[in-house]
Length: 164
Image (cartoon, rainbow, N blue to C red; front, top):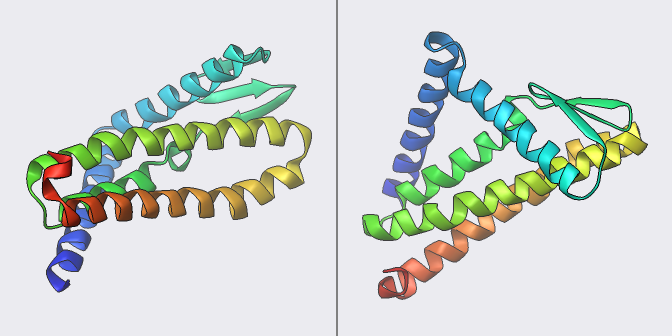
């Protein structure tokens, strides 16, 4: 257990260093690209459902309300924690890759749902946006990341061939 914890924090540290390097030496090329792509996906999703939405860079305008997608909106922190937990877990690398291949898209999809619902709610009520943004969605996203990891780890431990 101690080895897992130490490896987990080592991976968290490594991923944090990579993000800091992007900020300090690469002019936020990765994170800015991620925020702009996230805004594009959110605006496209809203449009797909018939919403009149425009996007300028990382800013989405919906029902005369503007929403700026920032680095923290992309889910990079929670996905980073999930990646660190999967990589730190003592299982064969092919099982870890399966965990990442299933978990990352699931978390990205959940984050897309989070951003879309927050924009729709926020266009109608800033108070509801604040409640959803600060209290409701963080709990849902973190819980889902934990549940995904626990489910994956349980399968990997119980029957390693299941993930092969």
